[in-house]
Amino acid sequence: MPHPERTLYQFTISHYCEKTRWNLDAKGLSYGVENLIPGPHRLLTKRLTKGGRGTVPLLVDRGNVVTDSTDIALHLERAYPSAPALIPASGAERERVLELEAFFDEMAGKHVRRWVYAQLFGSGVDITPIMFGAFPPPMRLLGRALVPLIKQAIRRQYQLTPPKVEESRVKLLEGLERLEREIQGDPSRYLVGASLSLADITAASLYAPLLAPEGSPYHRPGQPTAPAIEEMRAAINARPAGQWLARRYQEDRQRPARGFTG
Ligand SMILES: N[C@@H](CCC(=O)N[C@@H](CS)C(=O)NCC(=O)O)C(=O)O
Image 1: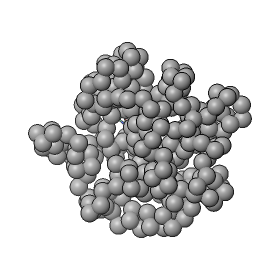
Image 2: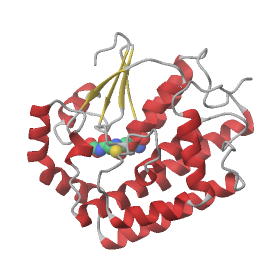
Image 3: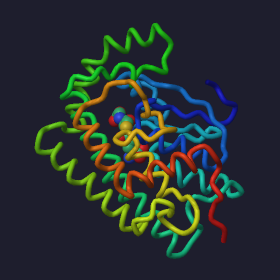
Image 4: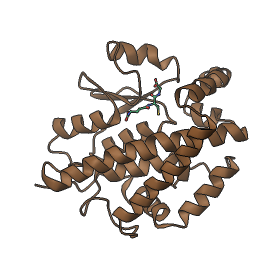
């Protein structure tokens, strides 16, 4: 959908795109979205970045082309100083937000993606509705035809080999342990200070494909998923980390953040 100022180019399934959508929503900034087809997306993203990074999310904000969810977050903090601050302007809290954001980008971003895709592909779940559900019907048909190629590319690009998938299982659990330490086992706490920050948005959005909390695009009641995902989900939902994630989606996903002051 076109927007006069800001357009987010995205894959609906991508958790890094969910992170940027939440980032924009928490800052109270409106935007349009353009859903891209994985693979052919590079024709557009490479052109917009003049041969640079081809990944999504890619935000065009009042003519500025910004890729990478972290760079987008930093850009938005600089460009909209009167919107709620999701990164404190300076000091120890700023350092903590940035460090936790980088940690969860890796532990949740990369490792949740690899582990979840491996389970979905291994169990034969049809990923077409998840990947192309937001497209109009003719594009969904094209999408269905492209899915085998997309799966092959995902297997190669994200290294879905058994040792790597096992490494990702261990890492994503390590990430949840750190989350629980940071919130001191209390699902009501934010990661840094007393208000939602980029660190919370990063951890919550990047674990969302695994835990499918209500209010996230991964919550699809009645849709089949892989048994290993169901099992992992049930185990984590019984822990403070799972309850924290559900609360962040329930309490913070749909409203602008309070923002850090000073
Ligand atoms: N560090 C990047 C990671 C983005 C990323 O890996 N995006 C994936 C989708 S989840 C992508 O665009 N893959 C297709 C490609 O590499 O061209 C960020 O934070 O934005």
